[in-house]
Amino acid sequence: MSHEANEYDVEQAQGESAEATAPQESDYDPYYLGGSRKKKTRGGFSGCLAVLVALIVVVGGAAVLGTKGFHYLKDHLQNSADYSGPGHGQVLFEVKKGDSTSAIGRNLKNQGVVASVDAFLGAAGGHTGIQVGFYQLKKKMAADDAYKLLSNPDNIVTDTVTIPEGLRVTDIVAILSDKTKFSTEDFQTALEDTSALGLPSYANGNPEGYLFPSTYGFGPKEQPADMLKDMVDRWHQAADEDNLVAGARKVGKTPAEVMTIASLVQAEGRGDDMPKVSRVIYNRLDGPGSKQGTNGLLQIDATVNFALNRKGVVAVTTDDTHVDSPYNTYANPGLPPGPINSPGDDAIKAALNPADGNWYYYVTVNLRTGETKFAHTFAEFQQYNAEYHQYCETSDAC
Image (cartoon, rainbow, N blue to C red; front, side):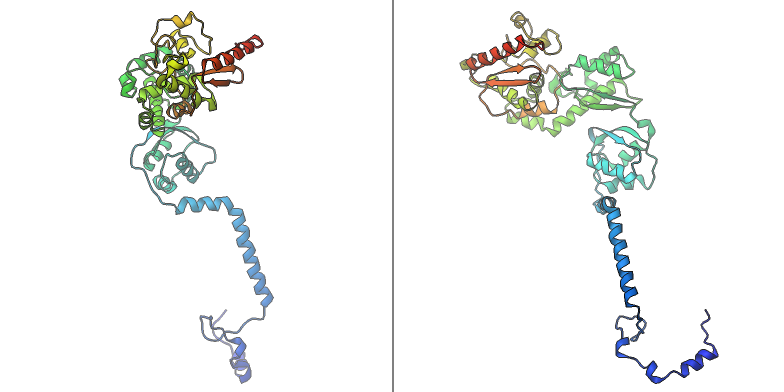
């Protein structure tokens, strides 16, 4: 529209009465930025309706955004802290279909890989292209290192292997050779170079007990030695998290002794019974064993089966207890020379934190349910042992 007034408009304006053009009390609006006077509209209902509609839009938008908005604020308003080191341990990380860069960063932070989501987003620099799959990462990685690893599809895990708790080295090797392209001989050769595995000095070059049970992701370029070292690295991570060295000192044992106890607990205990089994072992090692008829002997069947190279839960006979082996805890007082299997985190925790109790014996009276009873005296033990034999008479589990 033109800014010039036509003749009619001018004449009409001049003809308006002074009363019509004079400022009225009701027209004054002190918040009008263009001047001190503003002609108010009469559309009061329309204005209220506009405000109401705007309010509905805002509230509705907040409801729709909901969790997404919360995560956005959480991701972008947090401190963009970053780790400086290369990281440690093992984290098997999964990128799922549909994961955004922010979602990946959030998952990385939740799993302890990066220090903050912002640090990862900064490392990504707005780029995408991380492929779906599993990646082998570490705890406390620098965000740049984590992004570089994830952005390279060569690092996608091709073999995922789960190692259960309580397996011996020979059993672990059998699983690795079955789940990867390498043979048993390849892994056995790698085990011979114990210095390359990263074992603690107190393991004395023996990997038994130090191939940590977990789920591993092995990349296409990893060799048997790399895979075994990954497992030892994962053990170091668990040892650090459980404060193995300090905890061993607290219970009056060396870290090597605690790992041996943990392997015995893993073989003999289940669930909540693990700390109780641990206490029986400590009582027999450190308590007045002679008064209970134990004479410092652990008398653990699993150690005899290890000496005889027998797998699984096998009842030990009197003849078995005469086997000539340092692992025969029926003949040799104290702990065996080292672990008899790879204990999991629960067993290590139980070895470091035995339950309170005066027990010197335990008997699993039901092999199917794992129900185990603990006794202080030999008489109590005989009672529970009779219960076990009665169970065996009516069950094929023995």
